Amino acid sequence: MISDVMQSNGVIHVMDTVLLPG
Image (tube, rainbow, N blue to C red):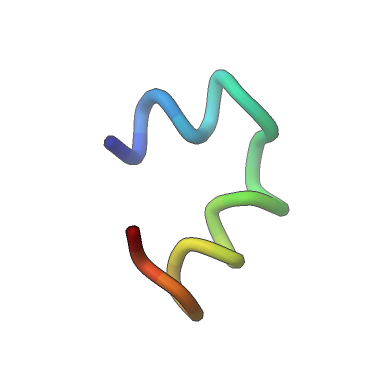
């Protein structure tokens, strides 16, 4: 999941995922 997020938006989205995983 993390890999897909990084490809999608990058670190910014990763931080958002940490706050609201899903």
